Image (cartoon, rainbow, N blue to C red):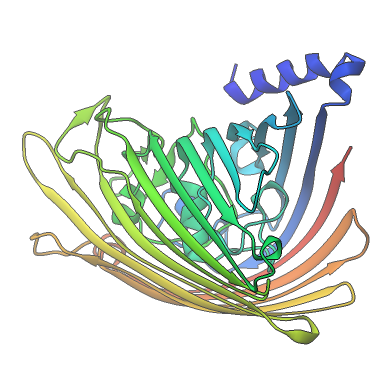
Length: 406
């Protein structure tokens, strides 16, 4: 039995008591998608294409089923889980998050909160909706796609807030620090596949597919894996002005030991720095930008071959809301620079994309939307394996979403 199903059965048992019903809450969504996609072969099938779907995928899919469950042990302590289902996986349940949250009653101008368990990193501008869905469209940027597929905090996090409204100030501050494990393989997919743009999240016990280089030989990596029993960390600081403008700085380092292997996987030392900003303007306008730059490195034991890649990406987004409509446009660029000494530079990659999106909230429960994604990329490894290193993907995507809660 998968761990997420065990969690679901336990929570279902708790639901039977009237006492538990007052403490148990849930919310979620069911999403159907119809699309046209010109990609050659999706990375989910072992190809080099950057999108979830390709030209051979049946054009009507169950995009996602997501379920958040909160169980309040006390007024200040609760357990939160997120599970998802994807038709791509034959409707296998994926446990995405499971963690405890402790938020004591405020005493004075400071607010603090602690998390313990497995949860998403607190750095996504786009994916803040139900079941970690994007608030600006269907397909998030490559930065936020990578956060959802390859990164997870499995450890402890503490945040400290100093809201301005309690000090008659226009300025608010927030600091976050965390110590975590089980991310020693994060970064592998950036080196072997590169960036991708999709709306999938990787389950805590699930692998990520890598491109197939030899026919019939499936390659994959388990990103949430502990290699060296050495914890990593991240630090974040955010400043908010008048609840209109927010700036965040973020530093991450998994401190993985390169050259060390366990369970058939090697450690990848991955670090990055990120800066993001969001500006809420009058009349429903919003501007947002996010940039990331980092490095991932591994040394294969015995043969001592080195994989060393710098990666970077940046996007700019504009959003306009009026009535129940939301329109968004996003441009982004991304690259992976192969820094090891092999002459082929197979991991070298660059790309750019444009996304236009419309979302309509028909009611609190029903939403519909349409999105056009143009993604152009060049990758040296794709040229070596397939003979053509360039790919221009056109994707037209429609979705219908039903949201529910108790």
